[in-house]
Image 1 (cartoon, rainbow, N blue to C red):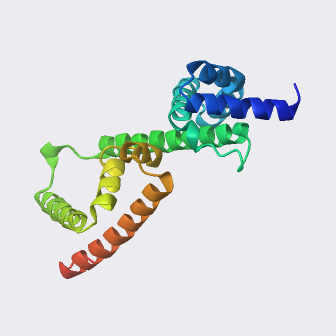
Image 2: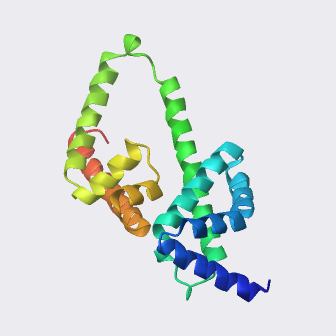
Length: 192
């Protein structure tokens, strides 16, 4: 098979997937699963995680095949980009969960907590709650999903049905605004 024929065939498979043709998805999966799986194993250093992410990639292909634009590149390039992005998102998610677990292990137990430290944490929690309340809803929702639900930016984009770039912009803008609000609030309370 010539490379040009393969490209046309891949484009046709994606068009069939847009029409909800499960056989086309299976054919595309069979064609690229080995190379995409290898890429994920290199990114994640875990066969189990790579298997999970590969399923997520093809689920995304099923849902978003219409997003593919043959004028912008080849289907294989699009698949590699999706796979790499999902793999990196998973890696970040795993790292964040590990940081939370380590932080939880280092936290002193409530039984030996210090009254001054408790009062300080309570005051800080109040400042953060007040600052969050001042953010626009779309920024607040994205930040809450990331920091309290542990979702990646891609998972947030999917949950909110918003483009990934929009989610990234909302989160960045929200963090900048939070930094400004917390800086001014902590200064007014004498915490700086």
